[in-house]
Length: 364
Ligand code: SF4
Image: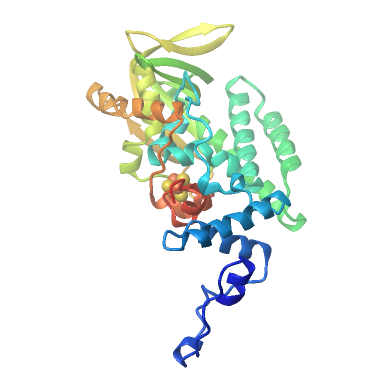
């Protein structure tokens, strides 16, 4: 094989030697496959081999030039990922903002938080739209819609997005309707201790100079005391999944912490009949924040309550945010290994994973 290769490259073929018994064992990594990509890989290996002779490297390069000129895919260095420089060095975003729902993902792994959506498949989109429909139903109830009508319309919309096999659809539809029924049940059960301020409350607050938090609160409620007296504001976030965080996780839940931070640095404002939270030096009185899980398989609707956070705890949380804005601004983004990596769709191109290094490590 060495002789053949040398002849193809116009080199002096090495002298033939008698094979010893041990030499006859085949190293699978050295076996060359008769394919275009395998031949190009061989040429590339020789070109980049610091121990190969100058003439061998020059000959391999000459062969690659010939192949590239003939339009053979993979022969032109322009098509070699590992030899390309970074495409863009300018910031990706000059005025990045944080949304409460993305902070948790950015804290875990900024690369995943920024690129996962591009890799998500259709099944994830189905869950996204299903969640959006449940939120739309909750919003409709908050704006005074008739419960039965809102539920019927939402279930009909859900039926239109179903792509599962026919035998499964009735069960999925019933489960979705049950989710809506239980969402309404939670709302009814909490009247008396909570009083609705507004739904889909727009947030645009600067928690400190340069750190802007924007997004929406599913529901903003005011706590009501036993004697009917008004308490602080409580943010409610609807979750359509069924895995509830532990008490410890809820206490440090970044999305809920972000909502509390927003209320500590904001004030309610009315605009066109809608409530907004905008920056203010005063801050609003807070009662805490709650995740509601109507999809849990328990008689009582699952909730995860985060108690009111003091100024010190909120300041500690706020200190985590500026580095996240740097990540969003780019152009360099951190990939951080965590237990989430096993489920991450970006693993094949992630630079800190063995699978992704091949395509992303420029200096490899
Ligand atoms: S594989 Fe892990 S480190 Fe890489 S992007 Fe995904 S979550 Fe981040």
